Amino acid sequence: MNFRYKLMQFMSGRYGVDKLFYVLFGVASVLSIVNCFVREIWLQFIVYAVVIYAFYRILSRNITARRKENQFFNKLIMGIKYKRNIHRQRKADYSHIYKRCPACHVVLRLPRRKGKHTTVCPKCNKEFKVYVFKA
Ligand SMILES: [Zn+2]
Image (cartoon, rainbow, N blue to C red; front, side, top):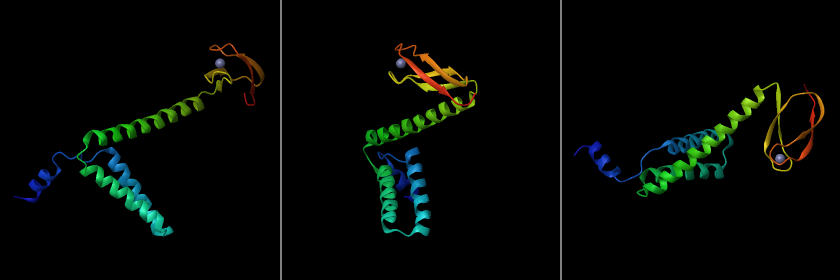
């Protein structure tokens, strides 16, 4: 029996590598490099904990739990990307401003006209004042 076959047999029924593993490993690597300069014992323990957790996930036989962790992580990343895109789109929109209604917290897209204005929320019909400093 060669080593590769033994490894395959050992890994069968175990979770293996996923995106979260690479991220955990990357975080551990970065923290390890940072710790070369900082030299803190607690940071070293965090690095060990992250690496141990990453390898525990690879060798785990509870595949559904590990898959859930990875899905949760992917949703988190997607949420961050979505918010970043929204922010970029609003920044690129020079002719409008985005204000949150103080009553129902819905975001309103209003024309960018310098000065004091009164606007009515289309959702809850509450009137509120908007100040635009730059036109
Ligand atoms: Zn409202």
